[in-house]
Length: 283
Length: 224
Image (cartoon, rainbow over all chains, first blue to last red; front, side, top):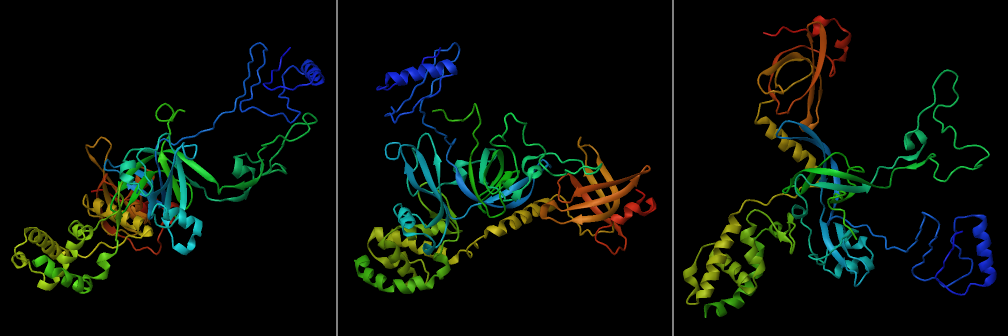
C-alpha cells in the first residue's frame, strides 16, 4: 500500500481516512490537494511502492544558447561554386544596421543571464516613446527588433556594443538559423501531416480525407493532439546545423549552405549550433 | 604665438573650410562592426580619422589647409614645435583627403545577390571564356573527368538554356551508339574546360524539346 507523505500540516483525520480509502481503490498515489493549503516551494510526493520512487520537484527551466548570436535578414538563394568544382546551394543572408547590444541582463538584477540585441534601424516616429527611451538609455539607434540570447555567462558584453560578425562566426562553422516559416494557410492532413491519399479509382470515395480518427466505444473519444487539418506554417522554425560557406566582409553578407525559413526579407536569428556532446551548456 | 593668434581665425573660417569638402564625404557610407566603437570605413578614411577625433587642432588644421590652398607649409607656423608637427600632419592629411578617390556607394540589400553572381561569373571567366550560347547552337564541350586525366568531349545541339547568374545551364542533346543522351552543363563550372560553338541551326523556339520526338538524325553529330 502506498503511503502518501505531504510536507504540510493540518490534515484532518477524516481526510486521512479518505486518503487511505483512495489508496486502497487505486494503487497509484494521486497528488491530493483538495483544500487550499499553503504550498511549500518544493512539493515532494514519494511513493514507497517497489521500483517506483517518483519525486516531483519544482525545477528552474533553462535553455541556453551555445554562444552569442546575431539577427539577420534573408536575401535569397543562389549557387556557390566551390574552388574544388562542386556546386553548393546557398542562402545569402544580409545584415541591416543593427546588432547592437541594448541590455545585458544578469542573475543579480533580472534573475537570469542574457544579452539583448537590437536590429534594423527605423525612423523615430515608428517606435513608441517607451521603446525609444529604452534604446536611448544605451545611446543606440532606434531599432525595430529586440531579441535576447540567454547565455551562461555575460562577461564581455556591454550595452551599446556592436556585434562583429567576423568575430562570432567563421567559415565552416555550424549554425542554427531560426525564423518565421512561410505561411501555408489552412491545410489538410496530406500536406500538413504527410498522410497518405486514398485510392483515386476503383470506386473509392475517399481521396484526401483523414480516414479513421479513433477506435470505437473504448475510449469513445478522439485523443488530444490527433493530427487534423489546420493552419500550417507561419510559425517560428529552427533549422539546425547549417554550415557557413562564406563570409563576405565587403558586402556584409554570409552564405549559408541550404535553405532557411521564410521568404527574402525575413528576419533570421543565427546562433552557434547546439550539438550534444560538444557545446550544449549544462546547468 | 602663432597658434593663439591664428586660433580665433580658424574658428571663423571653419564654415568655409567645411563647405569646401563635399557634404557627401561626411556621411557614413559603410559601417564596420567592431567590438567597442563604430568606425567609419571608406577608402582614405584612415587619413580622415585623426581629423574627426582630435579637438581644436583638427579645425585648426583644416583652416590652415584651406587658407594656404592645399600646400604643405610647415614653415609658416613659426616657432611652436608641437603646432608645426600637428600642422604638418594635418595639412598632409588634408591633402590626402582632397585627393582620395570618390567614396564607395552604399550597397542595397537587394543588390547583393546580383553582385555576388557577377563576381562569381568574373571568376569563372578567368578559367575559360564562355561564348554567347543560344538554343540551336551546336557546341563542343570539353569537360574534366573525375580522375582528372583526360578531357571528355561532348558534341551536341543546345536544346535549352536556363539563365540564372552563375548557375546558368545549357542542355545538350546528342546521339551516341544508338542511345539519345541529354546532358545539363553548368556553363560557369570550373570542371568545364572549353565551350566552343561549332555551328548554328535556325530554330524558331527557345526550347527545342520537340527534337525528342524527331528522327535521331536531327541530333546526331559526327565528332572529328
